[in-house]
Image (cartoon, rainbow, N blue to C red; front, side, top):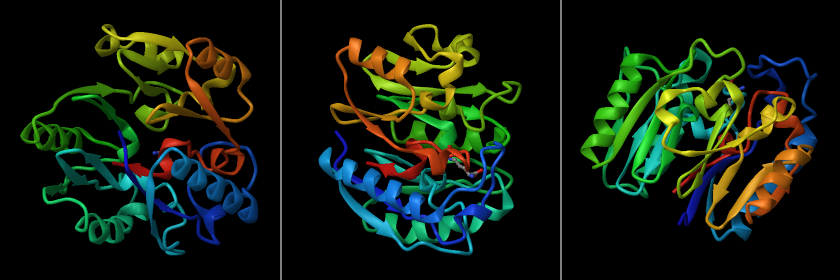
Length: 256
Ligand code: CIR
């Protein structure tokens, strides 16, 4: 069970962050509203929230998930794989000190974005991506091992569609993973029950299991129905403005 989450509202220059999609510029006020609804939803799921101040030096900093990997047994400060986001970790470091006795940090030459790390109980999948390099992934694997967890590295560099591992994969609990087609073929996932995401709905693969609910992005009816058929209680959230900046539901918080 999660009891807490760290969030950070988008800064006024959110639209000048990084993006690879061609969906137009996000509308700041709408992004704020969607972020607010996201926060209220996490609270409704039983989490108490810690809010970091928006920071215009880092227009991508609302995607707070990329700055750390949080586990029950300790925290690891990430080292984002693009220069424009490196400084985001300073603020997170200070806050994590209030909650975690044990913490490590990814060091140069390692890079690691939290969006590449998928927790599945006591096992973690770590994506090697355009953002997370092998050194960063190996450092994280060693820290996780010290905490008593196992991990598997998954190279996603030649997958065409996803920025981070969790752009195409979500752990639903138990033995279940939600996956896009390209990720489905990856060998390390062979022991899981894989729930398909249709090609037209790939963005929604980044859904978020929070305690006994699953948060899903609005506008993806096939996936939503599939989850309901599996008896999950879903909460649908508007994410249009974050989608424009390559961000999904998991990116907007660090749960622990
Ligand atoms: C970036 O390119 O870094 C941001 N615009 C989006 C980050 C999304 N984060 C995530 O998937 N964990």
